[in-house]
Image 1: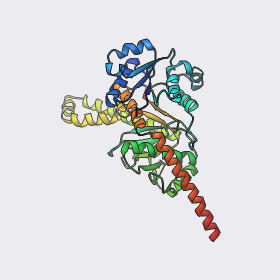
Image 2: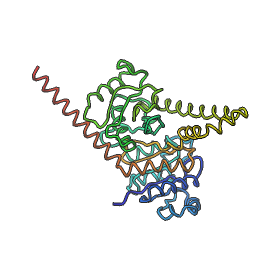
Image 3: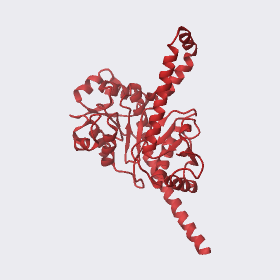
Image 4: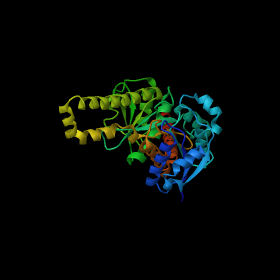
Amino acid sequence: MSLPRIAVDAMGGDEGVQTMISGAALARRRHDKFKFLLVGDETRIKAALDAHPNLRGASEILHAEDVVSGDEKPTAALRRARKTSMGLAVDAVKRGQAGAAVSAGNTGALMAMSKLALRTMPGIDRPALAALLPSLGDNDVIMLDLGANTECDARNLIQFAIMGAAYSRIVTGRDAPRVRLLNIGTEETKGTDELQQAAQRLRAATGLAMSFDGYIEADKINRGTCDVVVTDGFSGNIALKAIEGAARFVTDLLRTAFTSSLRSKVGFLVSRPATELLKHHLDPNNHNGAVFLGLNGVIVKSHGSANAAGVANAVDVAARLLEDDLTKRIAADLSELGEIRVRGRARARAEGESA
């Protein structure tokens, strides 16, 4: 059975068409069974494809006359969706012309277009933005929501946990990913009512394909002690930017230290293998590709400043989610949650009758 195509918004991102096409070509080498739909200015895409015959032979071009700017308001972008490369890439998923879309463009506009075109899956109230973050463990950690929903109730957080666990099973291969709720402490009495209610319900839902054990604090996110960190979009976005800022701070601090004197430069040469490993872990291109979970289709957001390797990783995320049918996994887990609720209500009625 042939795999669905991946639509790539070739005009999104800070680095231009060449970078988006180069990244798609790199991803094509890893996933040679996939075909691509390249959306954007046809003339510029064709010119970029000259250097990538492997991608050219596996692609179709969909011309778009307009582009969503980085500072454009989502409402304005929605009005022009049918003319923009981003809007047409998302529409290709809606129409079944592609199984997934990848864009490095305006995040707010991409979310708005995706929600309007694809709608949320049955059983999901709101989609969430999830991303892979580096950790000291064997696998990256998935964190959601990272900005799609500033305020969330317990029901939203439970749905995020289910979606994040389904995504994690694809990434980590774990049958029961370790899921935690982001909180200001690990004690059961800490946090908002929404957090405490979500934790209580997740502890009771023993049939879900996850291992839930309460809360995690922000300084433990990258320690490798859990696979999925669940939070509202407001807290998640702040935590993500704090982590990214700390990574840049460490990188800049090391660069300054190693160039401050001749002795430091010699020290750099001696410690270069270790610093290269650190650089690899802190490079956002190596963890690029955030996913809008909970929609009737796969939408992947690439960093606007991603290089070709980063774009390739974002396309790689889309390919893996299509290969492992993420939406089917989420639907199955939501169905299991529904059965758990039914069994819980039946047990409560039985206990009430026997009392």
